[in-house]
Amino acid sequence: MLISVQDNRFAQIENYKSIVEYNASRLRLQGKNGRLIIDGEKLELLCYSIEECWIKGKIHNISYEPNP
Image (cartoon, rainbow, N blue to C red; front, side):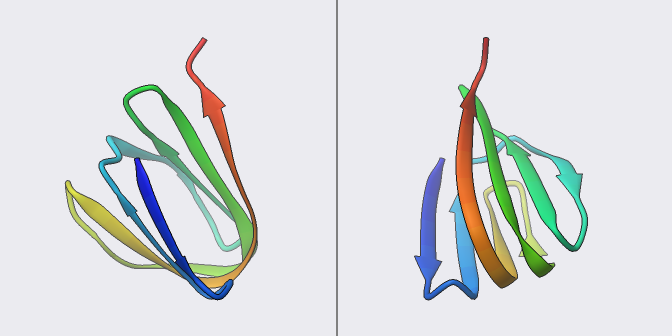
């Protein structure tokens, strides 16, 4: 996955496989080799496709969990 972040307000994620969890405080995306977790406040999916998604909100933390 490729992640681009602008300030702590916008993020663009490319090459993800699926959305695992989405609510106003957490977004979890499945990638080929693991999961990307974005924690924050008032998170919104601005747009998403099979290739990329755009996130808006106050991003507090971005972490990665490799597949077991």
